[in-house]
Length: 276
Image (tube, rainbow, N blue to C red; front, side, top):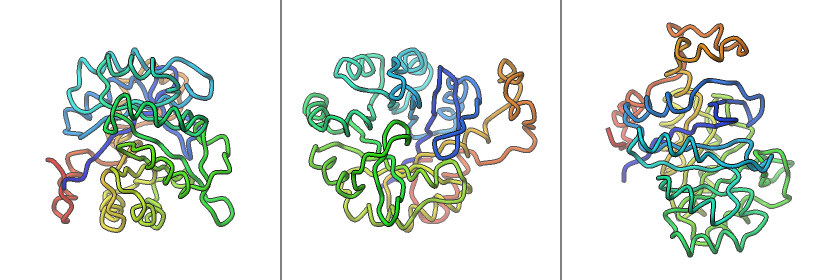
């Protein structure tokens, strides 16, 4: 079975952003310019996440999705503030292959079961944001800003009972820190999760991704900053440089991160099968 490499693009007000622990967002540029580069370098899937839609009840990424469906031709998923069947209908009609639900599933589990029945398991992904509080992992919502009091492992059971096709788990304490994944957590979750399982949050080097696959056997990894910073070019984001210190000081000769193609090559050379 091939392992999938997913690029996650967090969007705020139509701009690609990246933070640490889902906070402290940094503007990076036009998401479509990045998604096209990822597509051309053989990414398996691209996920667009509106990081403020749920918090501020804003409309989701219709324009971004519509634009990208015309320039990229791979699996495309979208999340952030999805609350109704109508929103899912609109996204699928625009060309999205899959939708990701988080807050709405917590607040109304019946909604989750209903949309799985309507659109099918393969169309619905549940994103779970978690953090270790005390000695237990708790589920958080609203981009990690609100506690729910729900135990992570109990919620995984409920989500699987709804027959969703995929689950993505983000450990907020690891997200954006580029120090590796919480492999201990993902290994425990792998024992419970029987559907497609995606790990998000923590990649800092290619070896981190290799270790994740070998130790936890997740089905896919979702990567943000290590791809963003590698493909980022200051000249392509000049309209943002006046208000963004990072872009002003970014030197494309000092890129951090790694390309999609070199990550896949590295994984294949070390026994993890990916589509080259």
